[in-house]
Length: 100
Length: 100
Image 1 (cartoon, rainbow over the protein chains, first blue to last red):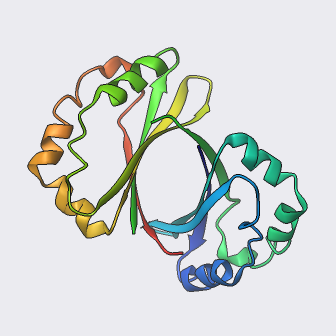
Image 2: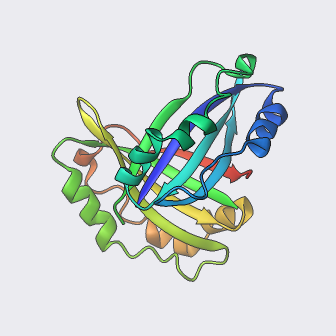
């Protein structure tokens, strides 16, 4: 099993708008082979941002990698450059193999 | 729902020993109210460490907080000071509310 997370620093006051983007998004994920589930998760609020992460679980790292090269991935990310003022810096990707 | 993660930087070459500590650990978690599941997850290997995280899912932040004050928590962490040479620095806790 594999967990893919993308960490986002969201400027203070933009939290609700950021959550709405994800709420309204058509992720094109549910039919993707190897996809298990998706969550948007909200971490701590710091002096100048709130930490969020996208959190998706996959049967394997390979199934995730295949998705990132697919048309479904391009569709899911086609609006990713919008709403830039919400973000402090670029999202940071972290992938994890489930050991136990 | 709530996800509690503790991030560990493990010195190169100590990965198998670190995984064995978690494998052999009696977590005392399965009977804890609100506990849903636990994973040990392995991230990227950098120049001087490999990133790992403990990843537990809870019905709520409150159920997690109650556990951290319990005897079960103390039992699960009683050996936490051992094997210090595996670690680069202290673990870093991050808690996340599941938004979507």
